[in-house]
Length: 596
Image 1 (cartoon, one colour):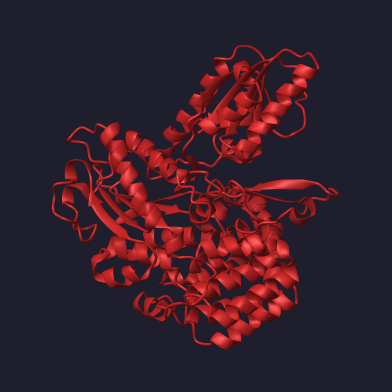
Image 2 (cartoon, rainbow, N blue to C red):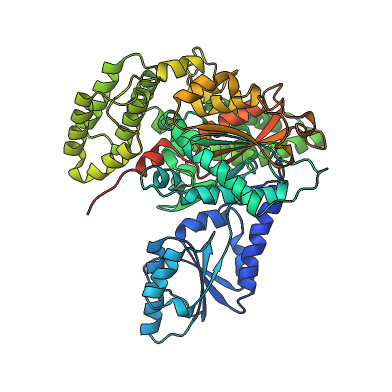
């Protein structure tokens, strides 16, 4: 399992949150005495690796396995299944139990649903006649801290489920996760929401507070001052653009999974044929913390400087006489050598992708689409990509970007590109195109696009962006300021009232509410306007804003938020909550369906 992130510098006590999750899991295991086989749903493996060390599980007599259709290979008489409430996983559990019965094996079975049980899943176990053999429980893991300022609710398909399948169960789950945070850190007094799902989550949260109130004593200042909820649907432009921060690019090309990336050992300079190694990527790595949010161009320069300086120090060491303290300093520097080497190897590998003409061409086209000046050039470029049969996901990303910024495509073009896509990639992708249509990401143009108005009003395109010394969040996409983060910037600086007309042009309703004992105080236009006593944390630290993205957030947006937090005159620290970390690649991929 990858290295567990260090949460010591978090502006909330996330360590206690993680320890509580560890304790809950260990109590489940302790209550099942003796040696046991813990069979984990593979998707949960990553979440657990951010919470608990494998060695700690083994101390409690646990043998670890991943759940699959294959029979369990273990001589343990006690089996614990730890799974999400998914029907296909129930079928795996049933086939495992049936296999044991057919072999005459007698075991004690426990099924723990994460984060809660579902009637439909238990029905499968009943139909397969295994329910009565099971002890059933819940492991309420709603929040996984991925880093000192990032919390994940681990809902991989929330965006597609609510947009395409009409399944809004993830919204209850998000509200529950936030309500759990309130039990630890107090009722959040201010809530702003933009988007259909966000307004619904704010509503569910209020119902939860009415039914199961968090009792915070009157004198205690809540640790989180404001909650901002934002639907992914409000801004589908940002995730479809290629991220240009270091961490964002690693995710685009190498796919970060629960705070680590798996690579061929040879890329990392380890000469072991065919071996894969996991590289942890979180703020425990001091160099990564320093460079993760920078534009990749700048990262390459910084790594070059560090390597050159190390080389000079080494030359001085070997050619001149050094004092003991100088030797000590040099040894200290040497300690950071593995980190420098790791990131030089990673950056070198990334450069093989970023220097490709196809990538540079795509970047160029993304900027042209976002600037919304040359419809024909963009249309022809996408048409050509389809004819060349470039990877389907790359085509879909540009097509979504094109459709969203143009408020759809004229009927003639819409029909033509659909037809060409099916000819090039196969008619099984009818379902893919229908998913995109249902989600409103690819549609016929019925009204004039508002994109130019939005772009100008929120200054989304910033000319002459200095990536080395940025003064605006636009550096994360080399000239495009993410719309989602501009909305958050307005929310914390001057409130949403001044941009009300622009908000109305974006998908979904918006709401602003006060909660708890602050619900009777006057409406808040700016966060600074929120009564002074709740604007500062009790011990003089900056107030905290929890920004929750429903449907996923990209690493580039996280970097832009960190940049905002670091600005002079910024009165807030921010913590990000998300259903999952996404990139344009995996977001577009969730809509792809293969029939048969």
